[in-house]
Amino acid sequence: MSTPKYVGVETEYGITVDGPNPVNPVLASSMVVGAYRAAGDDDVRWDHTDESPQRDARVGTVPEPGEPMIDDELGLANTVLTNGARFYVDHAHPEYATPECTNARDLVVWDRAGELILADAAERAAASLPAGSRVLIHKNNTDGKGAAYGTHENYLVPRTVPFGRLTRQLLPFFVSRPLYTGAGRIGSELDGRVGFQLTQRADFFEVEVGLETTLKRPLMNTRDEPHADPERYRRLHVINGDANLCEVATFLKVGTMLLLLDAIEDDALPAVPVLAEPVAAFHAVSHDLTARVELPLEDGGTITPLALQRWYLDAVRRYVKDRDQPLDATGEEVLTRWEAVLATAEEDPRLLAGQVDWATKLELLEGYRARHGLEWTSDRLKMVDLQYHDVRRDKGLYHRLAARGRIERLVGDDEVAAAVRTPPEDTRAWFRGECIRRFRSQVVAAGWDALILDPGQDSLQRVPMMEPGRGTRVQVGALLDEVEDVAGLLARLRA
Amino acid sequence: MSDGGQAHRRSSDQADTQAEEHAPVEGEGATAREVVDDVDELLDEIDDVLEENAEEFVRGYVQKGGQ
Image 1: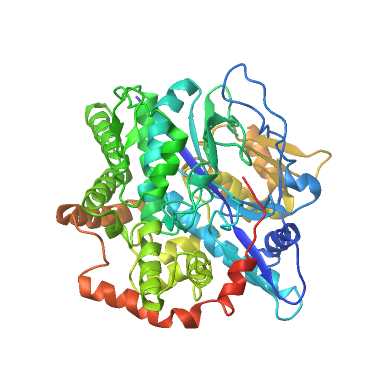
Image 2: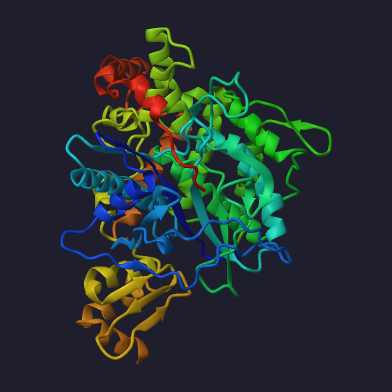
């Protein structure tokens, strides 16, 4: 019997200031985050009390030094929004971390809301720069010149699930999922013969398991910082995915993981195929546009990424059929779309254009390349690649394709626009976001698992939120409606 | 969310149809011809949308490494 899962995705966006005066990216990122305000509102600062990014999921291992300082210790912008998200500066990039969601569909909505927030914030930041300056934001993961920046998925799983089991059963999944999670890029960090590959990130991964995120990047990251009751939960911090614009891609990236984690929690998977060299396989999968590259197995055979995905889909289907819990509508849709994507890829992976980012972008690039007789090394072609990720609706090529109906959508523009201001209703993000919306001047700081409130008396009050399923609209909506201020809220919470 | 269930059902119906057809999704009712036209039309206008001095912009696009 698996427990409810929670998911959030953090994205470091690419940032460029184009204008008469150069602006360094840390300052530019800070300006972008600082420029974003609900009209007339002050920032609510981030509460770092519970953070320990050096904590390692592997028992008995000693964290390696070298993780950089948390940026707002350096005085950089770092805030919490009424939709429950965190919006801040990380490693010289503006970063948006979605609020906690219970399902893949909600995650798509709040991830897309982040794109609107970034586009809006960039426009506001540009207005404070010298005339002629522009701030351009790209939802991508590499500059194509040796730098990578992350899109990290975070899944809360019970502490009782052994980390070794997670690693063993997830590694082949991570290696094979670029078929639908890849955002595509021209060129390679590793192989000059690669014209175009499935992912932005694969070339930057060097080890199977590890704590680091900025160098020696591991397929399986061990950062164990649950931002919730550490006795009950561990956080699975997945750093090997790409930032997606296609909703089907984000939906599947997160939805398949949520189902698979249920199956792993219930120890319901048969023996998972063991890859001989997962990191080399990850590179090979990314460099192969057919999804049919043969990956060496430890037992001497080989398997293709498509066959690995089939293996996982079949195993999850059997698990869902046999378990004593019904699957919700979103879970059903994940299975249906997962099957559809694999069936399409078995015909020809390029037919996934309009559903997943790499194929959508590749179709555009191939068209442009043929029309102008360009090589894959052409800078003009690389501009088409880059501009696919531009968050501006009138300039971003993803958005131009979407406006033509070329992209399959899963959620409505109205839902996404609403999610810029409002939190998901079925997690603690609702309590966080609503407290900020209602009592902003009295919320001194907010973090994932606590609020610090100022009731206007002698001391500040910390309200712990260690359980991500507590603080939903159903649980605290009426209570919040009944109180007028933070002092009233605290009195009711103590009662 | 209050309207979540309805939206889920809508999406599921769509997904069912696609799964039955085992066809690549090309927007509702779009034929292969129309899809090619969509991409072709964007290719027609892409030079108007693309950054001015595209080559220079790409060469200058350098990001700091992140996570």
